[in-house]
Amino acid sequence: MNSEAYDDPKVEAAWLGEQRARADEYLRAQRVPFGCIADRPAWHLAPYVALWPVLGQRTSEMQYWVIVGDLPADFLAADAAPEPRGAMASFAERWRGLAHGMSEGKEHPTLEIGRPETRAELGDLLRRRADLLADFAHDDQYW
Image (tube, rainbow, N blue to C red; front, top):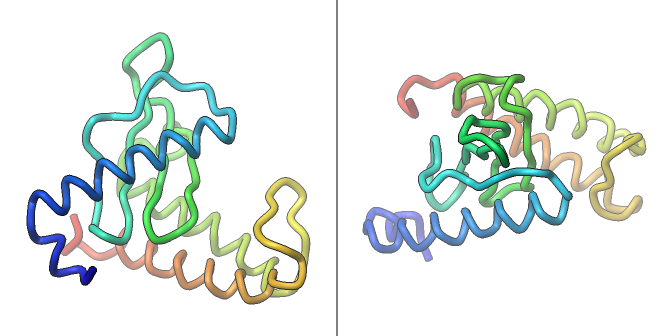
């Protein structure tokens, strides 16, 4: 489906529902303790990326950001970036660092992405996604 189809509110709503479910599955697989994912993303650009606030277990205060879409799922503590634009920039910065090491064939001490023989290729792909997130974060037209 091309991106123009997402101009249809029903198509976009279905995609957002899928992304919210993906975010939930990802956090549970990572064993991240949380209460719930917000009903609406803080920011999104369908069908590429959705950034969701994640609320705490005991309070309705924001605890994390989770990012999903046509990119790796990842999460970030809310206190690292109090607003969505900053969270996008933080994900981009983190991913650029990780991509740099992967492109050099280095193993990360806490993260494992793909098989060692595909590390350089995946590093380049991750760097390109990081560059897109950084562009989104820095370009006023998206906010």
